[in-house]
Amino acid sequence: MAGLAGFRDRLKKALLVGAFFVAACQVHAASSCAPPGPLTQVQVANVIDGDTLALSDGRRVRLIGINAPELARDGRPAEPFARAARQRLQDLVAANGQRISLSVGQDPSDRYGRVLAHAFGGDGQSFEAVLIGAGLALHVAIAPNVALAGCLAEHEARARAGRSGLWQRLTAVPAADLRQPGFALVEVSVARVERNRGGLWLETDEDLVLHVPAKAMERFEVQALQAMVGRTVEVRGWVIERRQKRPGARWLMPLSHPSMLALQ
Image (cartoon, rainbow, N blue to C red; front, side, top):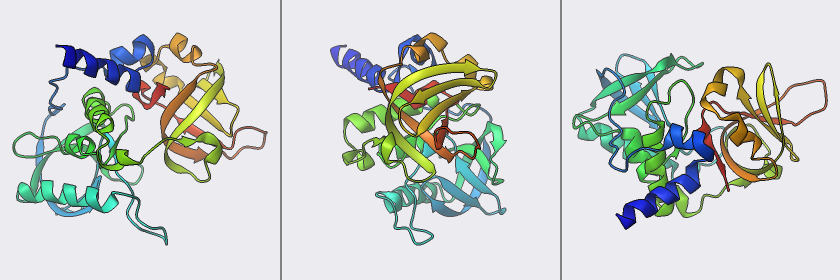
């Protein structure tokens, strides 16, 4: 019992801020990341990278809940553990004879036309949980596809505590060091919190603003966010370069689920 209590304490510190994080993310330690909806069997033609599959019918699938390191492309070298992530996903697919099961998300596709889905083997094993648990991908939660957010966050907490895979050397980047758009794990201090019709804005003294859109506000506790003023937070998500005429922060990171934000 003492070990279980200790694990829960570490999980709260790493992933939860206030009561709304507890409600959104805390799960029982025995959680198995079971399929959140109906399953459909598909044939995999190719594993593109650590979080993307090509199906035999021509569709591409982007796995929900994870972001794997990028392979080399456009003159940029592969990120650490990118090849290992793809190999692990290839092994999972091969172990199931290239035939796996998908649970399509509430939001069924992304702007690139890829199917958004959770992937499972014949034994019910969650591919995303395996990759996150091995430290070969980061957990991400983009609403409304957050049915397994708590379970996947738990797997990441274990991987991080054990310094598995990319957690051997991955640390949050100071917001002042942001140089380009894309996925980032960032550390920044919250200077102000403002709310308007567009949602809630966590302003910083760096060139970054965090934005909770109005449609996502119901998942957050406003008082807990306001309590972050003067505190350092670790935040993850896709950084966007703002195009605006008025002066303001250059970078914007939208947040649609509380597990993407944690006090340090």
